[in-house]
Length: 168
Image 1: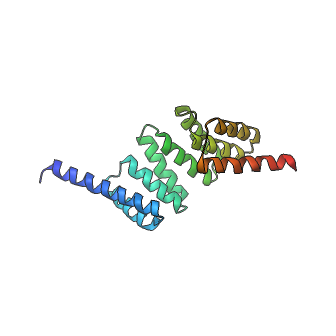
Image 2: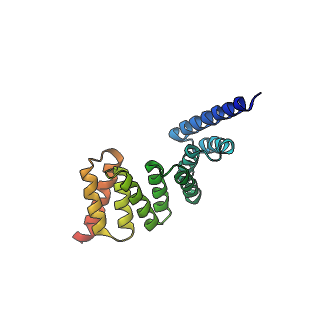
Image 3: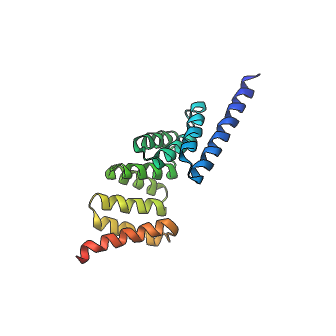
């Protein structure tokens, strides 16, 4: 068997593991997703998409340090994918590292200035740091980006929370 044939076989196996892991993650079977993602990572330890997937799995499990490490690896190897950077920022924020999360969201926003997920993360991170005026300005940016779905719901909840202290 030639080296090329072995490499192609390994790449196909890795892709199949990654795809199946994503399906399990989408279905809520995080343990199965983790097992398959780890298998894929063992076959392709430098693959950006697999580190991103492993980070999302770790985040769902609450293993924030592992999630952050996977996202950082993926960001470094991907020339800073905006989606991966937003996932890194979200993990940093959940880990209580609001200032680092804020910087990661701002880097993402420099690449894609009206990305609702990054605008919301920036607003939430600003609120976490106590900069409520900055959070309010960031929320105004979300409204300008025509956010929908979960982003709009989270933005509304944050806006409501920012208004309560002023009304008290």
